[in-house]
Amino acid sequence: MNRRFLLCTFLAVVVLGLGCDNEAEEAGPQTKETESQTKKSEPEKKMVKLETSMGDIVVELNEEAAPVTVKNFLTYVEEGFYDGTIFHRVINNFMIQGGGFTEQMVRKPAKPPIVNEASNGLKNIRDSIAMARTDDPNSATSQFFINHKDNDPLNYVENGNPGYAVFGMTVEGMDVVDAIAGVKTTVRMGMPDVPAEPVVIKSAKVISGQ
Image (cartoon, rainbow, N blue to C red; front, side, top):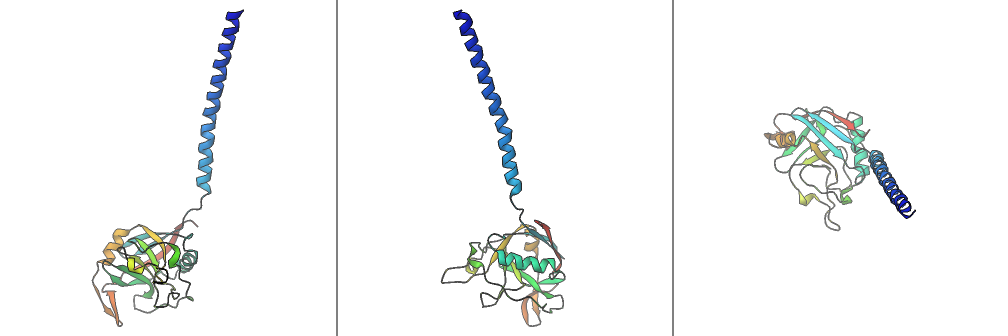
């Protein structure tokens, strides 16, 4: 009796142990599936491709940090405003600026200016894209620039510098930015630092996050 009791007890423990292992194995895939569903629910970041006469540049927009600026930029993109404009101000080892003039150096009529979101924590580092403006902090309209190097003097400083609002990063085509930054420039229509050979933005299109 005792041997039979002990054997039954031993078998019960083994079976129960296997049962626990099976439950653990089943829980693993469920956890992975849950993680997968969580990742899928995260919104895809919007990316815009600038097709230029010197190659393509893709920028990823930070809608969370700069909602007003990103909405403004996307409005111009979706309306085809940037198509046929040029990078009209290029300074090597500083930045390349575009989004306001045609090849004939005619300024395109822009929408009303937007509020400056430079205090959003994003910095004017190499690869970043930011809004151009006048001395008035809240004067940005359509023109933007891509930083060719880290430009700390352009960053927001509380009670010190209103800064220039960064709203995204270049994720592809920084080699194109480097090439544009290195072109020969001249003075056209009284404006310095204009590429002698126009660098045209053939098109600007949203390619993800729609």
